[in-house]
Image 1 (tube, rainbow, N blue to C red):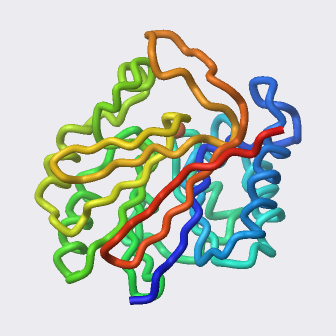
Image 2 (cartoon, helix red, strand yellow; image 1 turned 90 degrees about the horizontal axis):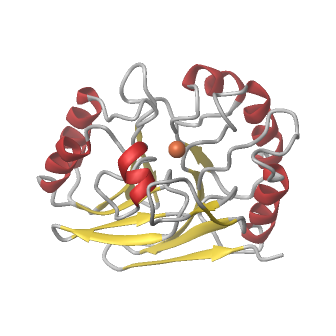
Length: 248
Ligand SMILES: [Fe+2]
């Protein structure tokens, strides 16, 4: 199969009105990343949730739509815990319908490579999505790349693991354990860059374009505010992935 290259951009937390979010010019941060990506050879851009600053603000989605509409490759959106699907549907061009009513989860075929996207916007993965995931994966001979906003396991990041974790992460992992053709899982939400391995599967945490969080200690801490993203190269067997940052 033809090799593919995907950019994963996460936790952009776009301001609805251009005001800074937690003191960060989040719009400028995302534009820096998009401008870098325009110079890359790419097949797909994935915005993996937490598109809006706080709570699904329409102005955030309108600004994103305006600023990615001329992006040279398809753009897929995911739902994070700061998003509202019904507002996203009004203002963003969501190119693929959901496979499960009431949430936004779907399969997308890129050069015949199956990519799967889940919705953990309510800090859970619903039973209906777990069922869909099982049923969908058995239909594929190929390996599937999986994208979900929340990581489905304990990541060794004290603050996020203990306060903002995926509530049914053990049940979700039990489902993933039984799906042999998911070996690579791409997440955001933790605002950090980390590769984890469990039961022969790789889980990748992708940095935010807004800010990166400290990973030790019970309290919120800021690591730095350089906007990051992840590049993924995949040929169906071999996967190569690296994170990058815009440094000012
Ligand atoms: Fe999040």
